[in-house]
Amino acid sequence: MSTETNTQTSTPDPAPEAAATVTVCFYASAAEAAGAEQLTFRLQKSPTPLDEFIAALPALLADHQASTARAQDPPTGNSSPSLERVCGRSSFLINGTRVNPERAVVHHGDQLDILPPFAGG
Image (cartoon, rainbow, N blue to C red; front, side):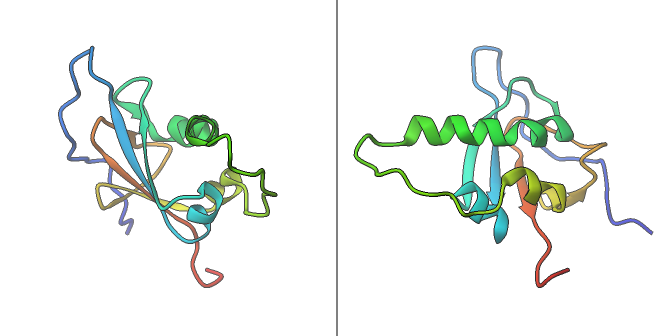
């Protein structure tokens, strides 16, 4: 019996002039790869298929990092795991409910949790 569901409770989609956003919470190696535990990203459209959002997430993260980087910050080597690799083996929750990325969608106001395997599992 699967614990996954496609039913989502979400904030109503914003008016066209308002930016649709999703909050992404990164855990363990996902937080290491993202360099943050929580970030908010704009959605190109709402709803967005979760698998499309996950595929775009590394580029969204790179854009976010570039826009928040300060000129005085020295460049650092990146020894953290790649976000693509981490997401490839992670579980996902939308608003606290486990979902299958191939069947779920994210809406404006949703919270997406990225949970990589813990303790080698």
